[in-house]
Amino acid sequence: MFSGPTIPTFVPLPSIFHASKLSSTFTHTVSRSHRPAHVVPPTRTPITNAAPADTISETLPRTATSPPSQSFDYVIIGGGAAGCVLANRLSANGKTRVLLLEAGPPDDSFYLRVPLGFPYLLGSKHDWAFVTEPEPHLNGRRLYFPRGKVLGGSHAISVMLYHRGNAADYESWPEGWHAEDVLPYFKRSEGQRAALKQQSAAHSCNGPLAVDDLARVNPMSSAFVDAAVQCGLQRNDDFNDWERSQDGVGIFQVTQRDGNRESPATAYLNSIRARRNLTVQTGVTVERIIFEQGNGVPRASGVSYVKADGNRATVKAEKEVLLSAGVYASPQLLMLSGVGPAEHLEGMGIPIVADVPAVGQNLQDHAAVMLSYESQAPQLDKRNSSVYYTERTGKNIGTILNYIFRGKGPLTSPMCEAGGFVKSDGSMGTCDLQLRFIPFVSEPDPYHSLADFATAGSYLKNESNRPAGFTLQSVAARPRSRGWVSLRSTDVRDSVRIHGNWMADTQDLRTLVQGLKLCREIACQDALKEYRGREAYPGKEVVSDQALEKYVLNTCHTANAMVGTCRMGRGEDCAVDSELRVRGVEGLRVIDSSVMPTLPGGQSGAPTMMIAEKGADLVLQAQQGVSEAVSLSTGTRQV
Ligand SMILES: Cc1cc2nc3c(=O)[nH]c(=O)nc-3n(C[C@H](O)[C@H](O)[C@H](O)COP(=O)(O)OP(=O)(O)OC[C@H]3O[C@@H](n4cnc5c(N)ncnc54)[C@H](O)[C@@H]3O)c2cc1C
Image (cartoon, protein in one colour):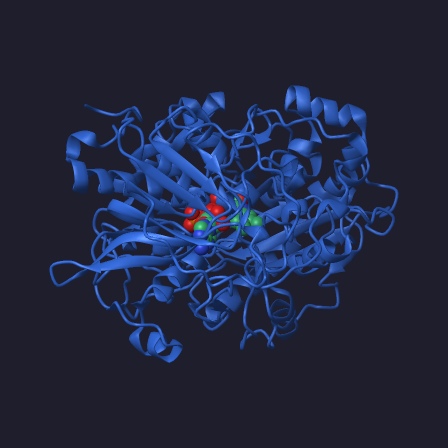
């Protein structure tokens, strides 16, 4: 982070796409396995970038925690999608003292900028690389769940698709979070750069988050859209306009600025480096929220964290602690601090601060499954494959210069460029299926192979074996299965136990089977004929519902939209109220993707930033009066 220009630093050509740049392992523990050498960028007062958490010693000394050396008005835990938004909005008056604590390093890697660098981030030092417990409905498979460990969070390693879901998604959310309430916050965040969409009332060009059309569309992605239309689906050129149906297929918009990845850190932090009242500290792992006994109700008064040298420190929050550590670490930190299901905490020997049974429950994610075709001349015909550009043209000087100086060309591709939303059954009210088109042949479970790639360097690097072709991915866009997380130990470095519980609701399985059938129909249309050879996965012999179900259970993987583990709303099944305040305590809110009661149909990054935009207003309104809230229409502070 704070590495300066948006255009990435030039990297010696041969090393740009070299898999050996990755760290060597993929593990479910927090920091023990990633210990890359890390360069701490120059700092500017008052922003301090400590050495990375990755360097926390394996034998972390259990030093006594010193009394709080510093105090701030707000302490934000986690510099991800939500944390970056909060840091910006809460420090906007130049006076309120805000501290942002992030476990990962600054976002200064080239791979974080170049969109086609995405696969190189998986399994790298920027990925927590979580693994689930054996999944009971998936033949005991353990799934790999990537999550960002870097300033900008998971969105800094994302596929960059810009989705809001549709208006109906928010009707089941609590009062104050319905479509008409949240749309202004989506727009406050959005800096729309595509001329046509700038003219639409659904969009705004004033927000910090750059959203744009793709700088280049792969001809195969366009052919997919044509094929889907030939199959009877309608064309949709704006999935985020709630005045229209979400149904249909088209080219996705992305969070990019001039062909570079736009992350929450580049969008919300780069422009406010000069603010002296904001301190951003990377490489520090928060391990506890500290509570004081207030008027009979425990009050969050600060946090304890582990520094790179293994020593602990505490910091005081005069007004509130804001927990934005994401879908796994937010419930983990609540539980480690004594807020969670009493029985579970007692079992772990953790003193109970508040019995909140909902903490860790309600985990949701987009399950996905692949249908792949090799091209007719698999080894020769690599004209349009992303793999081709990554393997060959990605090392080509012309392509690299085109990207660096013009923000154009294949290196700007997020890999998944086109797709759509479909009802797998006409009787459904909203689309249960998201389609995605990927211009190369993917393995059935790419996340399994990407993890292999991270450890063995065997994926995109392997140019001789990977044939050209294309893949259609079906995603359960509004999944019904619910999982949960629980503590593995009382050490923050041990990730939570993740029970995805995928396919617990058989409707999700039906959706994905229908998705495979529809994808096959689309793939067989004339528009894709030029590119279509043999069906590589699941294979043309896999036809019956039973065989397709088996394929889904054996190969489904994440589409990276985990949410819900600190559900907001009323009642026992919610961890925070509709103002995002944690039940049973004071001075503590959760503001991130974990508060979503249900997963909007589409990716979860933009909804998370919307939540943080609104969350910032809730914080300011509660503590400083409405006049301090940021104007919805302009994004500027009213005084
Ligand atoms: C591979 C991948 C692809 C994705 N693709 C898309 C996409 O195309 N479009 C889209 O909209 N969304 C996408 N997403 C999802 C999106 O990025 C997330 O929904 C969003 O980032 C969630 O925001 P968050 O603030 O809740 O958590 P995060 O962004 O994950 O941020 C949490 C932060 O907290 C830090 N942290 C954790 N524990 C601690 C601790 N103890 N102390 C200090 N800091 C801590 C983490 O390092 C992290 O930086 C993708 C995600 C992934 C992983």
